[in-house]
Structures are given as C-alpha cells and as structure tokens.
Length: 567
Image 1 (cartoon, rainbow, N blue to C red):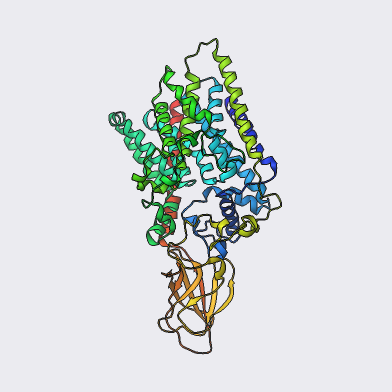
Image 2 (image 1 turned 90 degrees about the horizontal axis):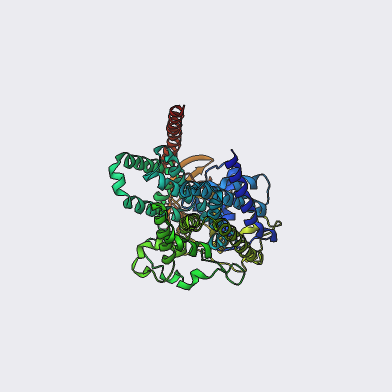
C-alpha cells in the first residue's frame, strides 16, 4: 500500500508540474488541436441525440458529415465528451483530459520500469518516468501539435513493453497486460499500434529459440493475438469494410509516396528548442538521446533493455534523411517519419533509466551522482516547459464549442472543406468536385422537376427533401459525404413506399439515391436520407461484446486459480 501511494503521489506531482504551461490561460491551435477538440464536441452532440456509438459526425464539415469515427477511434473520448455534456467549458475539458492522459502515462511507465529495472531503490524508477514524460517530443505533442491520439498512445506503449517481457520470460497469467496494451493502443492511435506490432514481431523472432523450447508460450501468444482481434472487431472490421468499399484520401498513404521529403535533417534531432522560435519540436531531448549511450558500460546487461535501446535509436535515425525512405514507399502509411518517435520515447526512456541504475559507479559516489542527475533532469525539464508558456494561444475559457468550427475566426483562412473539424481531409473521397463550404443544401439531379429541401436537417441524422414525382432513370445527389451504410426512405402521403440503398456519386463523392419511379399525382414524394450502418458493423459489435464477457470470465478464473495456489 505504501509503494502504491508513493507511485500515485510521485506521478501526480510530476504531472502537475508538467501541466503548468497551461497557466497562461490559452490553448495553442496546432496541426491537430482543433480536430480533436471538435471530435470531443461532436461525440457529446451524438450522445445527447441518443447515438452512443456514432459512425459519423453528422454536423461536421458544413453538415456534409465526416466519417472519422470509423477510421480513427474515439473510444477514449467519452470521458471529455461527458464533461462537455455536464457543462464544463471547452478549455477546461481539454486541460483536464490531457492532465489525466499524462498522469496515466506516468503510472504506466512507472509500472513498466518497476518490472524491468528490478530495483528496490525508487529513484531509478523516478528517473525513467521523468525521462519519459518530460521529453521534448511529448511536450510538443501535448502543447503544440495537439496530437491527442499520440498522447493516448504514451499510456499503452509501456504496457505493451511489459507484455513483451511476459511473453518470453514472465508468467502466463500476466497475459492480460499485453491484451490491454495492444487493444488500448489500437483504439488510441492506429499508426503507433502498427509500429508496436512490428516491434513485437521482431522481439519474438529474436527469441524464437526460447519460444520453441516452450511451446506453451506460442499457444499463449496466439491466444492473445486472437483475443485482441475479437475485442477490437467493433472498430477494425467496419474500418476495413469502409476502406474496401470506398476510395478515400487516406488510401494514398499506403505505398504510394516516399516520406523522404518530410524526413528531418540529422542535426535536427539535437534541436531542443521548445519556445515560440520553433513551430514543433521533433527531438526526444538530451536525456533520451544521450543517456542510453552509456549502457555499454553497465555490467548487468538485460536483453529487453538491449533490444529497447537498439530499436529506439533505429527509430530516431529513421526520422532523418539518412534513412532510405525513397526506396521504402510501403512505409508511407506512417504519414510522417516522426511518428516513430512515439514508441522510441518509451524504449529509450527504459534504456536511460536502466543505464542510470546500473552504471558501474563507486557506491560512495552513487548517491551524489543520483542527486546531481535528478537536479539536472528537473531544471532542464522545467526550463523546456517554460518555453511553452511563451507560446501564444487563442482558445480560452470564453471559447464556445460551436466557435471551433469557424475557420476564418481561428485560422484567418478557408478551404473547400472545414479545416478545423477535418484537419487534413484523410477520410473524404479522393474524387470530388464539391466545395463543401459553398455547396449548401443543394440537391443535384438529372431531373428538371423542382426540388424542395424541407428543413434539411430534421432532427439528427436526417436530410429531407420533396419532389413532385420520381421519373424513370432519375437520380438525386444529397449534400452528404458518402460512406457505406447510407439509405433513403421514400414516402408518399406519409406512407413508406420504398427503402433504397444509397451509393457514392462518381463525380462528387456524395450520397446518390436512385429511387423507383412513382405515379404523377397531387401527392408529393418525400425522401429521407439517413445513415443506418451496415451488417458488418452490427455483427462486429456483437463479436466484441461477447468476447469481452468471455475474456473477463476467463481472466477471473485464472486469477482465482492463482489465489487458491497461494493459499
């Protein structure tokens, strides 16, 4: 209980210090800040409309709707969304949420260091956590980039590393750590998940002899893999369905371009500036870059630490132009080479903490060295955090949720889509000739009949328009971005006469409806366009729900067996 209290207190204090730049009463709008705040806002709106797991954010992108929930999980945004529903302002909601993220990341690394360092002296665990949380890149993600997905990933990567250790050396009963780590990582940040899956695969291949001698471990690893697939099916299966059934801009990231243009110059990894003289800091900072180099002098080598340091440094090198990106286009799914710094920070933080713990120093001088090192870490960390207090922000406590969709107000510029809500248009169709900002509620058609748009957004997830008659071969293109799962209900005299599955209009990428012809009389035809989802979405939801129940039962039985053995 004492150890637990020390962990909570330490992690709370360093997180509190880490968050002090927010005292400048403004949030800087970075590349992803408004995108994630708008996701929180959209989720809160969906919940208030009884849509507790929205597939689309219907009001986003000038009411065309945006399908980011099907490609980028919002699983961990329920907490801030409920804060918004409770009436907590945008500014405070974002701050509280990020504080909790940093606090949980500190705890995750604390537990990971406790396992791997195998040291009773807490100071080395503290070093590891400080190296991890107070590094330049994490600060930049937190305060400037606004990369909420990567910030969440920092919570789960240490759990994956713990799971890596247990896969080869530890107890089978600790398999739930790897399950939580990988599932949480996938539901936080897809790209970090893929990187860690590759790192885990390499780690297992390096230990293949150990695994072959103990086949039970291979069975457990296979069990964990299947469990993770089933638990996250509710997100991954619908995402794959949309990617297979449509052509979105995100598809361009898969093996089509080289990342060489966005790679850094080698010396940029040593640029530790965090103030407003530099837009984003893409360096891990001095301690993560230099301290692990002294690992070669330690006497007690650890295979996991050796692996962590090597792969950590390799990832850092891969962010630079030294890496042959032009020959490895299949890695373009990363979008930017600096994505590799997220897992690199975890691996090198462990390596740095272990190096400090096991440096071959005289016992007489070790306490003095530790104190000096701790003072240096704190001073440099606080000074780098101070740089963010000098970065002006424009989101304040007075900012309202609906204001964050106003590009002109916050960015001073506009585009053919809503920049603040969509960010880069990854989940919009590749082929589109529509200016979403100017299009309005116009329904495109090949008919000459008058179209009346009746209170276009009646309720939630409902676009309605009326026509005198549906003629043979007529189609209608509603001002809604198409995603698989759209349908149209055709009414006449308030009676449902037909339900039509919508398709993507080839020129606009919008929702296209081709209803059957109707008789021409005095009664108008009313068409309701709404998103009802797909069969795969329903089935995958049931798969994950049942899997959660079965896995909880299985894990509970395992823990009960362990308890009985101890008694």
